[in-house]
Amino acid sequence: MTPRAKTRLKIWLVVLGVFILGCLTGVALDSALRLKGSTTDRQEMRSRRGKGDIFERMRRDLNLTDEQATQIRSILDQAREEYGQLRREVQPRYDAVRQQTREKIRALLTAEQQQKFDAKIAERDSRRKDDDKERR
Image (cartoon, rainbow, N blue to C red):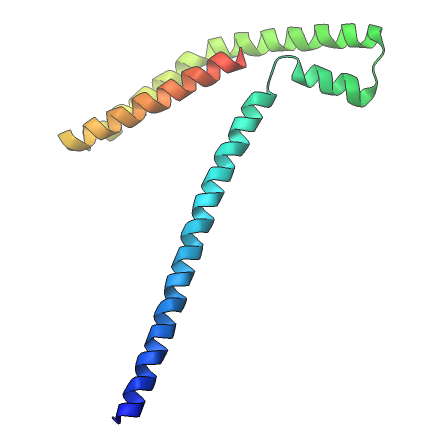
């Protein structure tokens, strides 16, 4: 191979390397932005779930009369109470399935993995409790 061909090959390899690095950087940035966006979307949805939010949107969008607003608020309050009661009835069953699943997974892990798993579970449970408080 001539020196000129070697130089050309090196140039093409550098160009190819830069292209590949650019692609990898783009993929990494895209993933990071999507993850950040989905987290922000979830936080926005949680904040929109305020008790009066659905009612206020209905009142505004449907241009409700005072009488309609009073009746609809009553209906929504009753539904919220029924949902809460249903959640209290069913929650123990969900908790039991969740606990059984965790125990099965934990049994497969090493002691070090179990510590990490327990930490992740504690973090997830804490977020769930915070979400439940926001919902009420």
